[in-house]
Amino acid sequence: MKKIKFLSALLIIVFAASFSLVAQNKTTEPTNEQKVAWKKAQEEQQRNDWANLGRFRENNKQIGLPATGEKRIVFMGNSITEGWSRLDSGFFSGKPYINRGISGQTTPQMLIRFKPDVVNLKASVVVILAGINDIAGNTGPSTLEMIEDNLSSMVEIAQANGISVVLSSVLPAYDFPWRPGMEPAEKVVKLNTWIKNFAGSHKCIYLDYFSPMADAKYALKSEYTQDGVHPNLEGYKIMEPLAEEAIKEALVSK
Image (cartoon, rainbow, N blue to C red):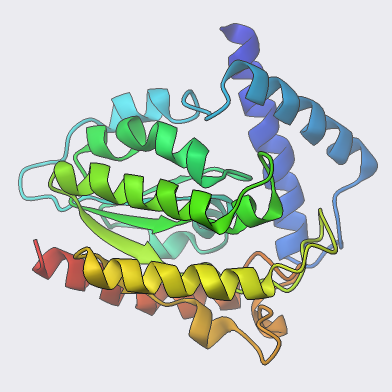
């Protein structure tokens, strides 16, 4: 157990350092030492706790149940969600917002941890932003249908527990720095079309980050990113009001 916790912590620290440097444009990529440490920790993490159920276990216990009248909002996602708290901490400050993003995660991993990290926290609304790492093949080859199945399952679990759902579009991406040549742009467009249609027919709020953040090639606009995938602070500032409006709409619909 101690070894698992240590490796989880190492994984978080290595990625946090790498993400922070890239996001601040101080370097174009992690050092070789960081890459080796990241890969080793990631491999150990996936062997011992594939979905990273242990990541927020203690913090979930500390947070406990919502206070009387509290409308708790949980953000479920990957590094884009995780990095939001780091680069744009003011967005979460003083609000009943809980960030449950984990770097590198795909929708099957999120589906496994959805109950402890969303349902058991008694969220009023969950904001789901997921799918880009599936397209990148982070946990193996994945079709759009597989991503759609996992997203729809998360929606079903949330709604069965009285949680309103905000389904976010996947952010634009023209290429992946860690896995170049996969041509994700058109896949993102197709997935977002499905997400929008599914949200409309299943009482979810559709949150469109894609339209204001994509350029003519369906890439993330250069002013909103340093690596083409993760938003910088300017990118998160575009996302902020869109998320706030979607959350308000979801709370009204409860």
